[in-house]
Amino acid sequence: MKKRKLSISDGLLFIFVLLLIIPQTRKPIQVALNNIKMQFFSPSALEEEDQILLQPFLYQVTALDGTASSIEIGKDKVTFISYWATWCPPCIAEMSSIQKVYDDYGDSVQFILLTNEEPEVVKNFLNKKRYTLPAYIPRMQAPKELKEKSIPTNFIIDKSGKIVIKETGSTDWNAKKFRLILEELIAS
Image 1: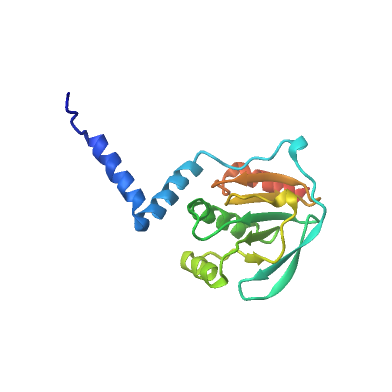
Image 2: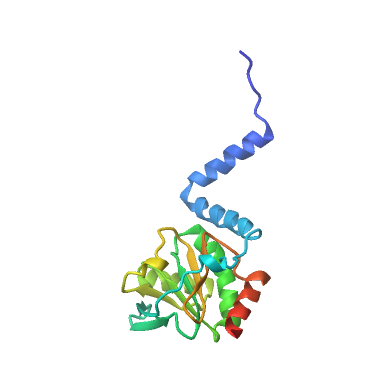
């Protein structure tokens, strides 16, 4: 029986797997891998026949300061809805690109980032990262058209209530391709 010598690549693979096992290094590595993935993927519009029309509704939410409110969805305003969590590496990876789009389009597009986490946890995360995104805790079940078990899942809804984009997993929301779609939706 021949003994196989370990190569440098075997050793690097072993170290990489070991780092993925250690909780303190696992999340940063997963975020970094999602950031690499995002360089190759940007959101694109669904085919016209795949776009679902939502009935306008009021999304019952609670702001992180505890204020309850209702946000109108599907009527007269482009809406960006994100289902996410602070512990989710793909969510963390795409968050900076969402912040950049919010910085440029926050007056023209309604941003709603929804999580089921404790408000203090979310506030701490947003403050640490210096994000100013509007995050909420949902107080109702999402309509079936907006239900998804995976996070992050993001929806772009046009002014008439059509789901124009649905993306699950991390993606580069700051990509030029997406910005062009968003500008077209705002102008229409």
